[in-house]
Image (cartoon, rainbow, N blue to C red; front, side, top):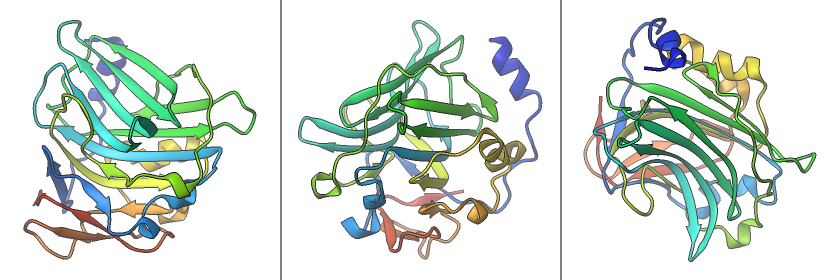
Length: 241
C-alpha cells in the first residue's frame, strides 16, 4: 500500500450514521427532466463534483461517477478506472471530448473495502484547464493535460450517475454535489469533513442529492435536489443503507 493511503486510512472519521445510498449495476440516477439536470453548466468554464462512493467488487473496469455522452461526443466524464493487473487506479475528468485530467494512483485498485470521498474542482477561466482533486481529504496534486469549456446546454445529453459505457464496476453512491463554480482547497477539505458527510448547503451546490431525502424505498426512487437547481432525480434501481 502506498504511503498516501497509509496516511489517510488510519485517520478516518467516525462512521456513517443514518445515511442511505443507492446501488447500481445498470440502473443509474438521472434527472427527471432536462431542466432538472445540469443545464447550469451550459458554456461554463468552471465546475465541481463531489461524491461519496463504495465499489461493490473489483476488476479491470470503471467506477462511473457522472457521465454525459451524446452519440460519439463525450460532454462530461467523471470516473475512476481500475487495473488489478497493475494494482493501480486512474482518476479521470473529461469535458467536451477533451481529457482534462488522467491521474494514476499507484498501489491501489480496490475501492470495495470502505467508503471514499472524491471531489473535483475545475476552472478554465485562464484557459489552462486548472483542476484540483481531493480524495479522502488528501490533495492528489493532479496535473491538467487539457482544457475545455462545456458545450451549450441545447446539445446536452441526459446526465447519468452510476452508469456509462464499457466494463463497469457496480457501486454504492450517496451525498452527491455539483457546482457551476470551482471550490477552494479549504472548502473541499471542509466538505470532506474528516470522513463524515454533513450539511453542505453553505457551499451553495446547484445539485445536492442527499439520498436520505428519497421519498420511496423500492425500485423507481425519487430523490429531491436540495441544491439551488430545481427538480427531482430518479433512481431506476433501489436504495441500500
